[in-house]
Image (cartoon, rainbow, N blue to C red; front, side):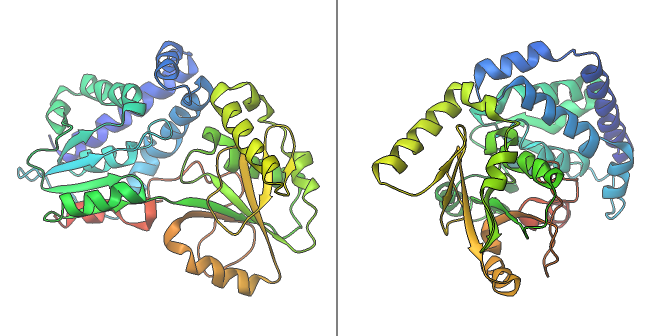
Length: 339
């Protein structure tokens, strides 16, 4: 299957998904995904599919992304193991697209949490071009692989490093995202930040789990603006997390703010539990920049309007990465090309 045919198949898949979203044809699929994993609500399944169309299967963006690389129609296919996460809908789709467009075979170890949507994506691609069926194999044992791309926790990463020590690999560990506020943000800025925090229930590595604020920042500003996702409290799993952490804070007499569905707590950690947003006050941006640089290997995205020596994302954009926004800033296509 030549490169041009693989690219054409991806573009046609994007057209199919775009049309299906417009006609509301995925309701039953999204319902099945929700029944299988209650974190995958129809709203966030739809958001995932919309982002897929706009950012990953968009013809112009595909050409822009792929134009930086040279592709050949080599017959020597590599078998690349993909250990996929399942924290948000279609979270592993970038790796799947990267291996496919490079002309290699994906040996897929699917997450039980996201098997329905991932299998749908692959199945539809196979329908569009039957030649693509040879590019995907679901294989939990990952037998006979030539390279590995794995996403998991810090604990699982140690296992992956040891077990696959003799093959080229990309191993991704726990990461989270933060936001830096200056105090000059508009209400619109903060409403966009609300998306960075709450979309996908805050379960993604690109979800903002902590905000850095000036020493004199009034936290009530956030409490008053953050209202769009109040309905989360009616979601059983989210509610259980909210009540659990609230109980701990109350028992320990921990200072915190509570707006009825989110708690804000001062903490130096960048990783906050579900239904909690950590915050930390800073004196000046120079010290803060140095602090963030030291945490670089544990951060996926920094959201801010401030200027730093490292890249930042605009408010509301953390959950909609482009094809060239590689996880952990490791160029997946370049890794595959060097095999």
